[in-house]
Length: 431
Image 1 (cartoon, rainbow, N blue to C red):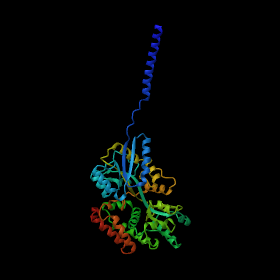
Image 2: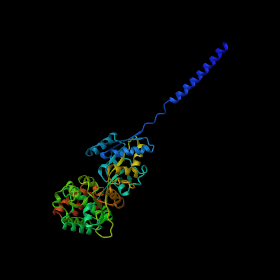
Image 3: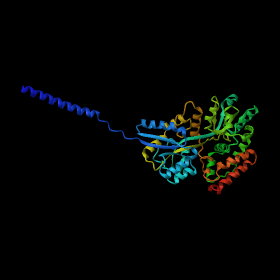
Image 4: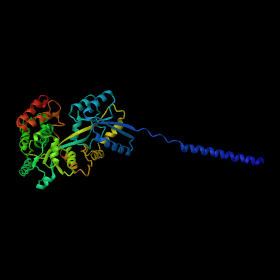
C-alpha cells in the first residue's frame, strides 16, 4: 500500500512538471510578436486635386519596395496656395514636401533666398529629367525641386481635314502658308485664333520664335548680344501679321473657349495652342481627331524647336520632421516609373524622360516624344529670364500683339515696345 502511494505521487509530480512545461511553452507560443514600427508620415501640399490618386499609387509603390512610408496629400485653392505655404513656412507648420512654381519667378526665388527650400543636388538622382526642364527650377547653380509636369505648345491640326486634302505636316513657314491659302480658297477657315486672350497671343509669338530665329539667337538676346529691335525678332511679328488673313472672321473678339469649340467642331483646321487643350477638345467632340507639329522654320533645312516649359515642381521643406522619408518620396518622383503613373492617372505629360504614356493617348505620346527631342534650350515668355521684372515680355506681348493685329501698331513698333520695356530693368539690354 505504501509502495503504491509513492508510485502515484511520482506520477502526479511528473504530470505536474509536464503540465507546467506545456503551459510555459504555450505561453511562449501565445506571446505577442514585436510591434511593427510606426510608418514615417510624409505630408505633401499642392494645388492640383487631380494628383490625389497619383500619390496613393506612389505610396503603394514605395511600400511594395519595403519602405514604411505613408503619404498624406492635401490641396488648397490655387489662388490661396502661395500665401498658405509662405505663412506656414514662416510659422514652422508647412508640409514636408510642397508644390513650387517655376523659375525664374519671384515667388519661388523668394523661398530660395529665405532658406525655405532644400537644394536637391546630390540628394536626389535627377538624371531622368531633361536639363531644359531642370533649368526651370535651377538657381545659383542648384536644383530646388523635382519637376512633375511639362507643357508643350505648338500647332494642333484637324487630322480629318488634312487627310481629306492629302496635306502633310509642313516643314517650312511657306508650306504652312500654302496650306492655309488652299483651305481658305475652298471656304475652310485655316486658323482659329483667340484674339481676345492676350496671353494666348503672347504664347503664339513665343512658340513661333523658338523655331525662327531659334534658340541660339534667343540665347544671344539673353546675353545682350542681340536686341528685340533686330530684324530677327521684328520678322516674327511680320509673319504673324501677314498670317492673320487666314484667321476666322472677327478673331480678335474670340476667347479661348470659343476657339476650342470652333476647332473641336471642325470650324477651323489649326490652332496655335498648348497640349492642355486636348482634354477640352475631346469633351466637346469625342470623335475629334487631331495632330500636332512644331511651328515650321522659315529656312528649309533649319531644325524646328518646340516651346516646352515646366508646370511645377516638388520642393523639400528644410524643417521637415520626416526628412529621410521625404527624400525617398522625391527620389521616386524623379523616376520613369513615377512619370508613368503621373501621366496615366492625370492624362498629362510627365516631366520625367523614359516614362510609358497612356496607350490610348497617341497625341500625348507624340508631344512627349517631341518635347524630349526638340525642346528649345533658350526661350522668351514663360520660364525665361525676360519674366523676372516689370514690365516683362509676357505682359508687353499680351497687350501689344492685340494692338498689332488691330492695326494700331506695326511689327516694328511692337518690337520697339518690347525692347524699351525690358531695357528699363534687364541690364544686358541696356548696353
